[in-house]
Image (cartoon, rainbow, N blue to C red):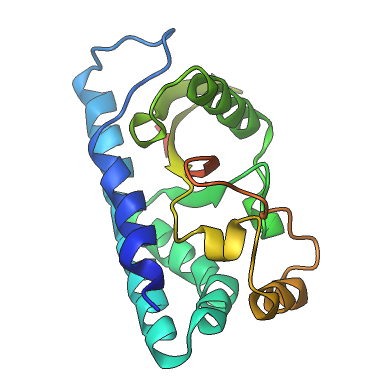
Length: 197
């Protein structure tokens, strides 16, 4: 089974283009452009590393092994990339599988905005958010990139999941909310933040 043949290329393929919310200037200064480039590169490294682990797991033992990779290796991979790149990186979803992937308040608002834009016909593959915010006298760069649900994602996140896969998911994620998706739905997003001086 080629779990990653469609999954990760879809994720990585979405990184080449970005659109900002209407209230943000379309022309970014060089500092923001550099931060966006850095965020996209970090997401690319994360996706490529995870893809390699998933591909290896599927080859060795099928879809169940891939679920183990997501359960046991995705977080360490995330932490490794974050450390190497000097920023915070992760995945979020309002219908999360892993409780660590639940969005905070501002991330949830971005996902809600993505959902509204998608419902209005905008392409999820081109949907992104980038902003520098200031709180308590400190500046932070925030970047969020939508993740569309691909056809292969449905094997673990769709409406008709194989009973063995469903049992494995129930074992590893008893509070799983990440099922019932259809192809093209907003699955969630990559999120990158960087504290600025």
